[in-house]
Image (cartoon, rainbow, N blue to C red; front, side, top):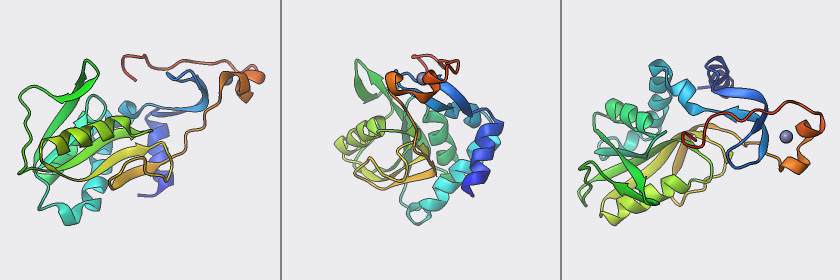
Length: 193
Ligand SMILES: [Zn+2]
């Protein structure tokens, strides 16, 4: 899928907004991306996950589990699992530690694809990869809808992303939008970010 086409879908669904935003990190940015707003539409979720499935086509016979970190990645995992015809599970943080809960289990017989909605530093995905490897299961690779670190891969394993972008951010003191007195908004909430 063409990058322009994907951007049009992001803008149409209000997932990608331009303006002046205060991010959860405290940094300012001229754009804000909320992946849930595009993935709430099953047809776009299906289209983007098809790209992930196509990328890992050669490993399709091997993969028997798709996993994501909660919360944002869960719908991606579910849809990729549906298209591959395999189970989908998720890991979640409890007391700071990424864990498998709810009776989800992995063993050395499992071959796993790790997915996420948005990767920036890749921290959550790395934790899930470590969790999967600690169980003895094999990690085929990782995939995300949006890689906010541009073309670079912050992981030690293959990472396929449907869309790459370099998030522009400024320290508040250096923000050109603040200097132009552009009104700032703080989208989302800490609990959902
Ligand atoms: Zn600013």
